[in-house]
Figure (cartoon, each protein chain N blue to C red):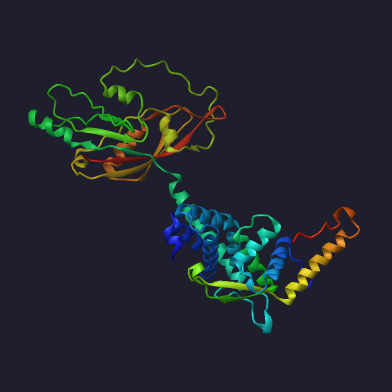
Length: 113
Length: 319
């Protein structure tokens, strides 16, 4: 993927969720993190599609792992953000910051924790 | 909640089949595993119906994205090089590097499917409403027991039976004449309306009407004939007696087909009869002669009578 590529808005959210989850980022936890932090319903299919797209772009890496009894032994795939993913995310957020700079109406109102 | 959640909930097998369509095997296992894990977390102790509802709702919400993913894979999504020069391919996830081949395959599949549909359509564009003319031997048998042996009896008058109303109208027998096998004309619509039915019912034919020029408004005599579907053409049939079947064919006890293309001029008279699929020279000639005497109401185009052609299939069936 070119170095000027800007991830889309949902891609940015997924990258951020994977970053937040650290070692425990896989499909359902990413979805849960997104729903919890954005307050919006997200389909598991959309998460899977985006994870795969980001991996195709080289922003994410993955490793397979065996599943436990809580998932009836089915495999699980953990994702982690690569350096290129962090760079692309930083690029997108910088772009957003530059665009909204000096716009009082879009001044950040705080971050919910 | 024990193993094989999908097999325990109502519709689980169908859900599994749907996911099999939408996802590759490895990714499907991960997806189902995530669903099961989340279901255990969200619906611990829930009934199987609740679980099924939750699983179905989650899966159906994911269908558009999964379909898009499937299409993207078919389109040849190529993973970017990963660390160490290795490709970042998901384990077991087959990507299509040769996208021109994928496109060619997709185009080829569409061409094949389109050709099949086209061939089917061409084969059925001349869908011919069958006209069945079974000879009813069952009607003949009781008469044979009481009547003298058949002599050179005239050809049987056709009896018309309409479908889907299977009521049979038979010709009235005339005194002690030799028994005559009844001939049925069977079709999806009433191909021989009016006079034939009335004659079979024994009614007196109406007095001939004064000739009326059907070419009002003026006929387009030089217009190329329109090609009418058999159903429409048969609706225009004013006088279409059924062709006679020689006795020898009535005794064969098998179904025979005959295909005839008829052209009708703007005045409703049959101008040409071509036997497309013949049965026998004698039968073909008899059918041709009969069809040549058929009369139609003119087919109009933009309010003007024009000639038309159509195809009829006669099915002579023995009973």
